[in-house]
Image (cartoon, helix red, strand yellow):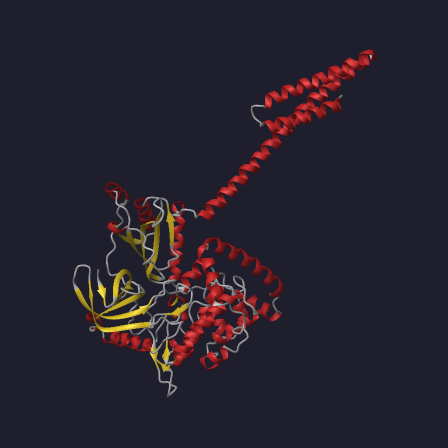
Length: 597
């Protein structure tokens, strides 16, 4: 058992250019933490990165807040022992573990939040950001990927790699480094003239709020070549909201609030103090307990909830747009000159390292390995009858890009390899651990992700297939995952709820089919009886005109003929209908015969 201080070294969580992260479990309390190990030999080769790491640690040491990932311990002279027994000198940073995953990941798979939930999380975000600013710390890289959730779905601000401290006494918050993620960076950060770092954080909070409410970003990049941002910077907010209201609903209060946050002029941008006085901010929130219950409900039935929310939202948007979107003559005049863009904006870059100083990303993998051509898993694994490792729920971190399957692990990996090949995604295998690492290169940049197959911990007939992003844009990664999942849809095991629903639907279909068959048989019976009765009636009339004295006999003969027809008809249908249907036929026959007589 390998140890670092009082912590047992467990599974690997991530790798960066200068660091790696392991799950740590306290030997006595069993508390789970993140063990971030920064390699000293590499840090010593890059003085700017070393300064950045030191700055990050200094910043985090200042902050103790429930909505910020807590720094528990720093050991500047730690030693990490590899499985091989080799030892390396590291700086050990022990961090609070947020095992609920990223806020963005939750949003991606459950849909955007209702306003009360978005407001509740925005309150938590602003509480954390305000505390940081009050301690003289600016984050400078706020985005959904850096907003984590703990096991109770409480928001935690993470990744202070771009953070910096400022003097509270002087009040000088100006900084110069162009850093962060472009889609969330305030426009003044690109000017090269310096910027107020706290106001830049407020801008990023506005982008995060928009995404929580809409499910997509307000613009692609904060420059005037971007259609959506151009409308903000030129004060044409009506067009900005008109374009976005085709896909999401925003109340007038919401629009006003976001307009004040996303003001391209930092001197006119709303402050945290004024933000808390705004009508939108003072709106309804929900308690932590209610929030936990609601998000647990969404988490347990992601696909169904997502579709229902999507349908309800479309209906609501349709109703709201019908009621409230009558455009003024001025807007119509503008619209006739300038068409609205067809699609919603999406961040046009996945460069997460947009800085003049390099950044160590502890939660991503910078992959320098070459990727081999795919080789067949199935034949080799089936020959050896190798079983995948069992999924360990104790050391797992919440992941929404996963599915269960009843298909053999070897077949799943073979299919996945073929799918990746079809999608022209380079990948390599680790057959021993049922593991695939993939690298997708596109015009938007590079996305690296891994897929691993596990044995199900409680159901031996199932396997668990888990995908995790290692590097690159979250939106692009989730788009890739959705495409891959679509091509593997036949391997995905239905949940018990889905299976029960399908069985019920199948039962209803069979029931309806049975009813239709019975009704058709009855209709055919009645037609046969009516035809027979009509024939008997014709015979009866003929006999009556020939002799009045034999009228009674003719009538008797008619009844006899009808009964004979009915009996024959019941007999011929007995092989294709139930006894109850025979009774219905018999009853119908008797009634028709009596009428004929």
